[in-house]
Length: 155
Image 1 (tube, rainbow, N blue to C red):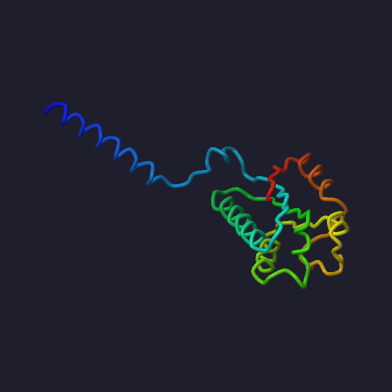
Image 2 (cartoon, rainbow, N blue to C red):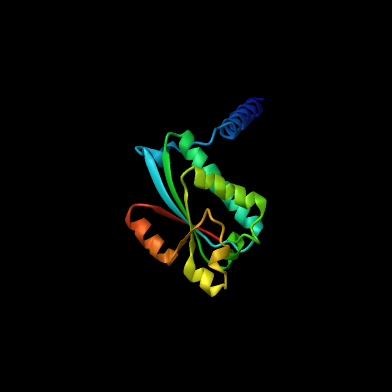
């Protein structure tokens, strides 16, 4: 009887413990402790529109989440690789274009690599106007990281 009662108590404690973990709210306080602003550069090399939209939404959610926690985000999105074709007027879909406009309006700098546009035969005149053509995003990575920007690769 005592063993059975003890088992019931142990199971009840374990069950309640699991419930408390499930009820926890997401918390980034430790990561942002002592910060008023945070700098990040995203290295975006997505190959298709679906991944582009997914990641633009994620970057936007990250921006808003930082603001909600009292952190001023300073963000750069740098595009390179074959995905630079997605940033052209004839190819980009409405959802991706709207997200880029929204992020730009929030103050996010959005760059595209002219080395990548040359390699992947993209006419620079067809790149959407919200995006800034830079000589080489590797130089952007070097410069921004040396100024304290965190680097996040998105494939």
